Amino acid sequence: MPCTKPFSISLTICKSTVETVHSCLNFVEGMEIANLFIKPLQIGNLRTRHNIVLAPLAGISDYPFRQMCREFGADLTFTEMVSIDGLLYDNGATRRLLTVHPDEEPVGFQFFGSDPELFGRVIPEVENLNPAVIDLNFGCPVRKVVAKGAGSALLKNIDRMRKIVEVVKGATKFPVTAKIRIGWNQEMIVAEEAALAVEAGGADAITVHARTRSQGYSGHAQWEYIARVKQALKIPVIGNGDVFDAQSAQEMFRTTGVDGIMLARGALGHPWIFSEILGEKGDGATSPETSVERRFQIMMKHYRLEVEEFGETVALSRMKKHFGWYTHGLPGASVLRNQIFRAKEFQELEEILESYRKNNIHELAH
Ligand SMILES: Cc1cc2nc3c(=O)[nH]c(=O)nc-3n(C[C@H](O)[C@H](O)[C@H](O)COP(=O)(O)O)c2cc1C
Image (cartoon, rainbow, N blue to C red; front, side):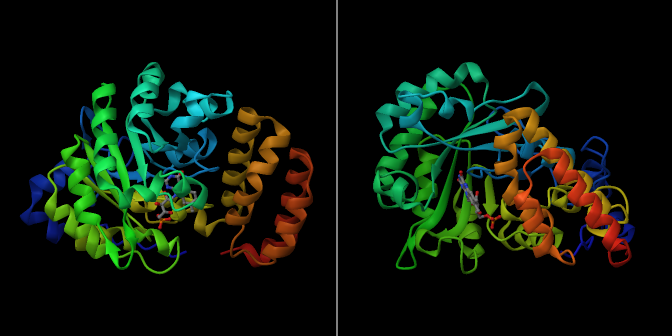
């Protein structure tokens, strides 16, 4: 993946806007930020360090992955989506998805469901877990979710969407946000109408994934609808869809005027995308992109965190998809991945990686 530094603005540009630039420099601890688009997000009473957010990702945005992204500068992150019905009839596993460690705040909790009354009963019960934000999923395209009237099905029932926001807002002292898609399909684009309903319901911010439900994850995100929502709303608007590097992040900020950007697939196997977008001090020479050795270190650290969190067996199965992403584009990646997928324990995996590293050292040297 390219690692350009389009955000590093030259001093000539800075001269005319010295104050603004000064306010943008160094506000993220340990990072020198020289990007006019990067600034804190104010979501109700939550003020984030900056406006590049890690998305809720089912099966992925657990503590270890959130922590890896945090290591590279992420601030606000989200749990994966959690079922309101599942929490009501809790079997422990659902509640576990809301585990947040003290060293990783702020973490938003994302919920999906279709019955406003159930939201009203369940939300007060999660107050003691101190969510940074309560986020409502109005975009999930998965058939099982939609069949129950939740996720993107609510794009076809905007009154109910608004009602859910109202009820949740009345049931919590924490900021409330919502994440929508732009419509059900190309014939039914409801981005502005849905976003206005979310705002009228009392939400403190909104994220717009610029695809319709029928697009799934294919085709292009249609950023023009994010721009329209931004024009129509007073609350902060976070844009989402197809930001895979610093260049596309800058492009989204520039063309839509959004207050923040949410990253999802761009962070898979690539948690250092945060430092690339935030313009971490340095010229990219230390980017893991340029060092396979470093990429392996990051991958193994991620794996270690998964083992600590879930135990070796569960960690290995959870990590397999990540290994695929981390090794993407390496010479002999498919052979390496096959070996990795067959590994049964941590030590075996370390040996496989070490042997790969030794055998490929010349090809890997940049
Ligand atoms: C594997 C996977 C799991 C996802 N899980 C969730 C989820 O739990 N909640 C949600 O709102 N969106 C979820 N999404 C959607 C993403 O948050 C995001 O909206 C989408 O991938 C578009 O952003 P991107 O182009 O940066 O990937 C998921 C996406 C993927 C690929």
